[in-house]
Length: 285
Image (cartoon, rainbow, N blue to C red; front, side, top):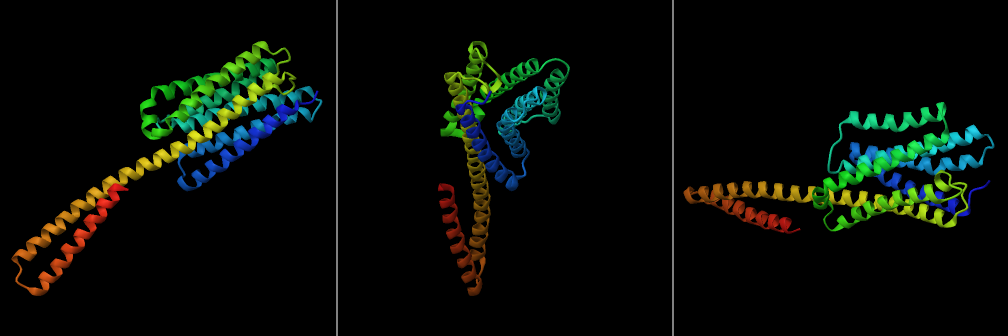
């Protein structure tokens, strides 16, 4: 049985959008070398794999290999989702490395062991449960840190609210599809239910695009926040230094009888006043 054309289009769109996310994050990581960017980059790479691996099921008639592609698909999606969400969360909270590594081990090992020892459907259902759990944890983290997030995003705060709404919608759509679609298979790769396919891949597309937009706006918010802090800090410190220079220059001029010293002092005071005006302009930027 072949994939429905809408499923193929959905997988291709997923691949393209995730590839863009990987390129953008790679550029960020190459410049910053920060841990959150590294985790996000790994997340996009695993999500890319989850968009490619379903096509493997159409290339073989061997049931075991076909199931292997399926389990690779769902586990890759969970790893990517977990790493991406962890990376996004690190803009406002920090995670102990042991927790991140421990969660990854659970996400990977349990479904694989169940697949080998029991059944692929049980392994996939466990992975889907992990997926919902990851999303629930992220929603809880965002809600608990909403003030800090709003401080970073400011006018773009609505984007993360939309992301939370579509993540919730994604879970609801998945539950509905699992319980209602007669020819349900994971990812609807072999389904013929057009409405279910459109609903599923539309929700995935919106979550992917909003996730990328939130990432870019978080980066912009962090940049502007740092810029404002540096502007205020350095302009304040330089202003204090100029006040000392001007005070010292005025004192030297008051007590000096040398014409050369007074000329030099006047120049110092004049340039200090010009520097003071520049600082005022910087603070207004």
